Image (cartoon, rainbow, N blue to C red):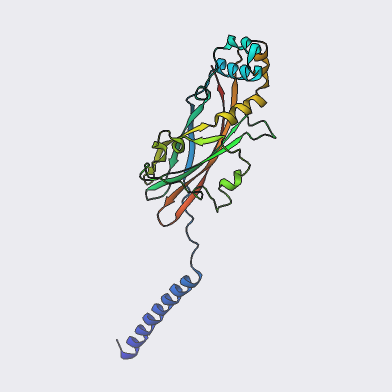
Length: 263
């Protein structure tokens, strides 16, 4: 190989390397679109009604309340004794499943639940919300007002349910009940984990709501009959997880509906 041919070969290699450097610089300037964050999938598996008043206890409550005592209350004895506030408590559990699409473990850090009683009714405060912040140590889990704040327009936060009635929906974990719902569910990479949130309904707001909307049952009470109360409901909300390299990610909780039939 002559000196001139060797020089031409070296020049071609240097030019090619220079071209590669220019491509790298161009990619650095323009870059490629960052990968979108992996969105978790949160679903409601089941809603289970726990403590609840019986039809007879509700009939006794409304009857004695309407009678106001005295001789008029004697007619209410057919329904039994006056129930206590504890007898009239509604509590329920929401069983959820969290699916992790990322290659790293995913802790569920907050859950917003919006509960609507008699969802077909309008004009009343039949919506209640509860924000549950979860921690590694459920015995030391201070609740933050910002735990269910959302900056993503696709994921609803507390501000999106601003019309909710105060005290209608209460997290059992925040009112002295079981604390397991506050333990962070850790979802393995590519896996699914089930977890449970315990909630209850404020006695006074729920009784007032039923008195206004369960008109058929109240009419039966006036005629001395024990009604069969049915409470239609709807549940929706959001959940937030943390994913490595992406931070806090929100996901919507699909709306679920059902009917509680009391006994």
